[in-house]
Length: 315
Ligand SMILES: C[S@@+](CC[C@H](N)C(=O)[O-])C[C@H]1O[C@@H](n2cnc3c(N)ncnc32)[C@H](O)[C@@H]1O
Image (cartoon, rainbow, N blue to C red):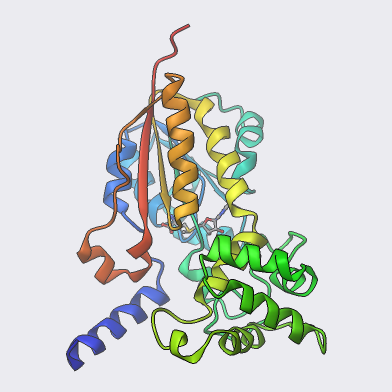
């Protein structure tokens, strides 16, 4: 790659980092088949990129119910969605409780549900939250700051075997066993409390030649711990299953994932409901962002989008 190309890539990365750019926005909203005056659920409000555009397109009689379990995200979203607040219900809650919340709100049916999984740029960039190996911060990684378990708890209490399993399974890290061993050895002298302490341990565990190739050596381990801290995979399974019964006939569910395990969960649930004639799968294969979107927004690179439509009940 030429020098100017490297500089350009770096500049693009910086812009994408300071602002959360919604991933596959047009594709997701097209597949939701938004209609004016209808009701939609955004399970992952984040920076409000998808939510704002949904609200703009469904007009003054449309309604959006938005979830996020991150209190800071919800505070920020009030400003982002300020022009639409009369037709938005913001819920600070894990989307796995979607059914309970919709019932409490008296909502019987919705016309579309969107999940855009993972973390937002705001979470990654918040130097206090511990999601990023780029900032030295307390080892936290909780999306919901009121929840019990932090990354520090896991790193300092799980057995070597449990740590290796998490790092291997959720991070697809081939050096998982060595990293787990190094963590357990280091914590014997003092607890591991910060992101940069963990980064140093990971760097020590991965041989120098392997560290020079591919992404940042801590990337996979940080991703794995984040998934474990937030119990993300179980949440996705429960959230999608909770949402499908609320879809009206012809209503759409759209899910954007960033990890092969997440995508597999979505694929299997859609297949199961298609087999029971409850859903019709719209995306036979997952859709991915265009090369242009990936260049503009590096976070989009691992995105996969699946969509399905609720079939009319045969009873
Ligand atoms: C990738 S961001 C969403 C970005 C958003 N679509 C946008 O355009 O700005 C994911 C958001 O979902 C939230 N989230 C992830 N898992 C969640 C869960 N199980 N329940 C509620 N919110 C969740 C995170 O806190 C984060 O703010």
